Length: 400
Image 1 (cartoon, helix red, strand yellow):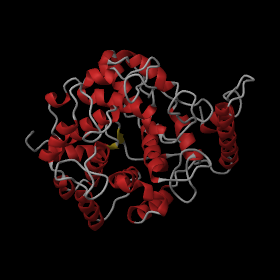
Image 2 (cartoon, rainbow, N blue to C red):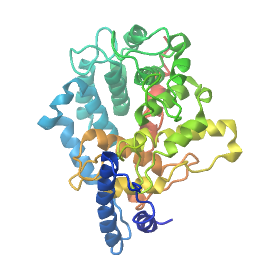
Image 3 (spheres, helix red, strand yellow):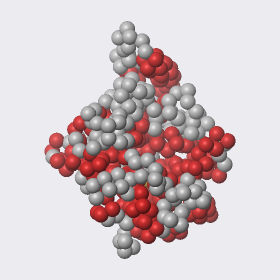
Image 4 (cartoon, one colour):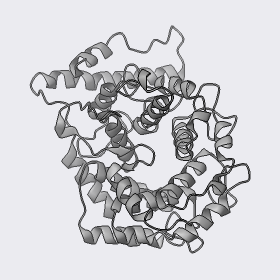
């Protein structure tokens, strides 16, 4: 199916049908489809004169991200306790766009992230803040993305492991910080940094798989905690955590596959985060990134019955991102009409990379090779190259 063919099809039979029962949810869904339809129609006209459409605004995204790296508008003040996240979102986006920073800038960023490291281990949301698993994950990913020996050496592995022990619960879950909430993000963040930095040990994650499994819902997805609603971000964290434990086979793989496949919107082509919710560009990764992990789990069971493509419509997701989620001045967004921001830029580009690069090495790149991004590692959401470089450094160090 060509790009133009999918757009024409989408304008007809895939529209949402509220079945004569109007609700606030259905009204919002129809508004989103109308805004997407308008962009699809404009794109179809452009396609008649530009055979390379749609295009990734690579240069504009790079300019936007580099500006944000050292200067953010006042609207980001609310994220003052998430400064390692800001570094990670920007660095990872630039990495996917295959844009490099000079050595001086890499060093400045690494040293700043180092100032966010707590003497008690782990990283806080800014210098002097208490350690927390979420910015710890972001800081480790950012330093691995920088990929220099200086950046790697900033991570104090001994105190990091002590911090992980301090937030571990007997049931296998992890608190986000000492005395904080327990949810599935904590297990994933702890496992991700432990595996990346070579401080993993079985005892630290005893009972974690059992606790993660208890978060899988009747729908097939994962909730943040047992008994809650399945959600795209939590589902990715649950599946990725099980993969990092080597125990993904313990969950209902086919139930999860069914749930996540049904989160791709028939008209828009992007993903929603939960049942009966609107499309959102960030779920291009939170939902789309689960498919390579599911693919491997299914292939481990029976390699003869698994497709060479991901089990979602890869071209449709790319079309939604390229046609509906790019700001003309740079940066990506949730959906048409929403403002650009570095969070959505990061996860939408990550989802675009997943959709472009298949498990078997085949590529499905809408708009031509000029739109190709670096290949993302779906377990960690850093590039494959960054993962390899980090592994070479940390796995040459003795385990703790």
